[in-house]
Amino acid sequence: MTEISLKRQARRFAEKHGVSYTRALAAVDEPLHRLKFELATIDPFKHPGFLVTDSAEDILEPPMPATPAEYFRQKVRGTEVTPHAFAPADKELLLEVARRTQALLLSNSSDIWEHRALYRAGLTEENIEPLPHYYKRFGDSESFLRNWRGTSLGVFEVAVLQGRFRKNYDEGRAIPDRQLTALALKKITFEELQALLHP
Image 1 (cartoon, rainbow, N blue to C red):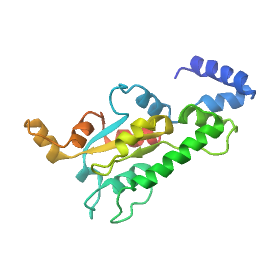
Image 2: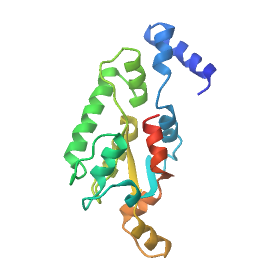
Image 3: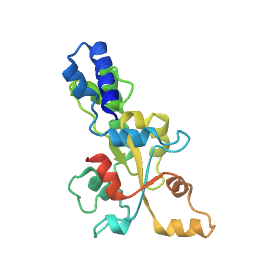
Image 4: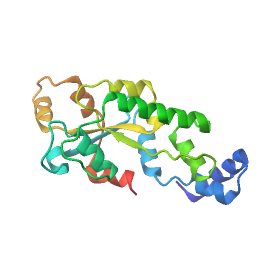
């Protein structure tokens, strides 16, 4: 974002919310602006998320559970990896979506980015961090998040390239719909994704 554009946004924010220009400038200067831009520029007819092109073996350290989802999710978020952990149940995702929806309603924000600006200006109490979500095999969370505006809540899909499905796809053999969907995601390396989440 250019400095002129940032200043213009800060003036509008200050007028709208009745805060000083300095506070408004801090509010509109989103530290995760690259992630915000990447998610905003994904084709709306495609899924809002990323396909990590490194193989699971490159990213995850052994011993690895049957489903590497929780390992991957924790590693992306920079938290300690717990052995033999699995992806959160759909029930936990539902509760997280409800919590985020409530936070946006309380701050009268249209999306996570507007809410985060209000938080930086000191106008709301709870900050919301973007949450990369790796779907557990063939669960319903993918369609659930699409129907509930997952990206506006800061939850976006992340999938790891799974070599055996890629090989079948390249050879023209049928692969599960879930894997086909993952192949349509915007491609990114694990290092690039970490840079978007932790600039």
